[in-house]
Structure formats: C-alpha cells, structure tokens
Length: 128
Image (cartoon, rainbow, N blue to C red; front, top):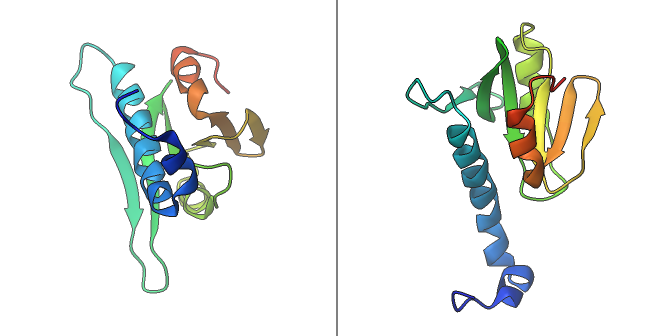
C-alpha cells in the first residue's frame, strides 16, 4: 500500500526516530477533532527551562474544568519525569495522562491509555 516497504519501518533504526512525531501528530489531530465546535481549536503545551534541566509536556487538555497534562510516547517505554514535574508544580491538575502503545492503566496520579483509545477517552465524560 502506498509503495511502502513496512519491513523498513520495523527494522530500520532511523525510521524509529520519526515515530514519536507521528504519534504526537495523531494525538494532536484527535484533540482538534474533538474540540468544542463553537470555538477555534487551540493546542497548548508546557515548557520549563531551568539551568539544570528542561521539562516539556506535549499537550495540556482542558476537560470538565480541569487542566490535564498529556504526554505522548511512541513506544511502550518512556519516562514521565516532565509530566510528574508538571503535576508537582501545578496542584490544581489532579492527574496526568500518558498515551502510548501500551495498555489501559492507572497508577496514583497517572492514567495510561493506548494510542487507539484516545477517541474513547475524549468522548467520555466520566474519564477519571
């Protein structure tokens, strides 16, 4: 399909470098698709610069009067250091969301959903 050799995407390490951007783009498009139709869609992120370390959260979602930090990972692994830092410095955000190739899960202040589950999460009202 499309003349792509899928084995190159699986085997070639260089191709893996683009998967993070593809996963983030997918999530961004889903966030825009499910945004309030009566307002222009906007995407927000969080970035902190410090001498010893920088931190960045991919997206900030507003849902049910909450600000939810969202971190997107293209694989099943990946640290959540920036997301945890955001939660520590913004106590009004009660939990964060990790979207990855992983599984549905929950650990203290972090909900996890697979990439294919974002549509369902965006449609739900009782997501906590």
